[in-house]
Length: 460
Image (cartoon, rainbow, N blue to C red):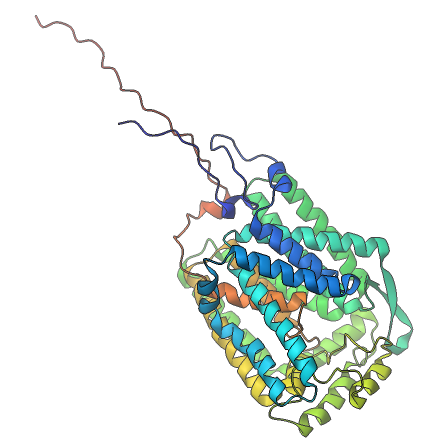
């Protein structure tokens, strides 16, 4: 019986953006993947373009985020129930934020921004469940590169506290936002570089290197100590996790156990690490010892927390125009727009808005997801999982001096919840080790001709 010579399709997870590929053709420059994006890569790119340019697009950006999430969710409608049921524990946080409308000081604001928070988390879960995860990373690379080029071309600078220094802030009035964007874009570029080398796609590799250089330049000129510290943690984690892909399960278990103990030690030494971060920022970036006024924000937040310790003031109910306390802090920080501000500390932000109950609930969800994420890496490691763990560690490293993962329609919120959601994907068939090092060549099936035996000499 002969074998059929029908053509096959290159898996989306191996080639990045899915496109039909002849099995007898070696991987080329990857030009076809630029010309045609699959649904996963296109959704990631459109979603993050809308989020990154939210300040410029305003209401149109929010509408684009909702429409893109809804359209992609509709395209995944056959899998939608499974996607959300598997990751239901992560929906507890945004649902609790919406439920806080029951005691909120600004119910309308809580309901509006709580619904947006829920949509943001839903988009993150959809990204984590994408059938082509490498295509998602390439879509993110393109979105962050577009924003970086626009920031360089049309961006400006802002002042840095009372020391008379300035820093490049790009398209917004926040240098920290630009630094966060540049650091995240740099990590995405490094991950795509590894993917491109594994898939033998030199054009993607060159694009990733160029994008990384642009992002590093933006990070330097934005002069953000928190972003530099977080990027260092993220890059070291990404390198270590990639090295462990070729190691055995025992080595990965030992490494993740040590990492967990280190994280616990860091949490117990929070005050010492915060003081060290302040000294680092003062020495390396010529910043004032208050980290651009953060210490005063935390001082005022302590009084606000003491007033309503258990349930807080309601999600997004503090930073509302007309609130006397918020108006005073806006005036202190010199924010004329009276919006887009936070307490620059995730724990403090949660305590002010959702109280100790909200903080304990959030920490419980985080712990459950982290345990699942570590277990998945030990049992079923992959290149994209390495990226999600590294980007999560980058975000967590910034929580002492930034509020991450809590704002609606924000890139940090998508990254935090997408990274946590990566732990709950269904089990897959194990891939050979060479699948992420060198893309295996697929040979063309061919008909096997019968072997002819040499003629026999006649018997004597």
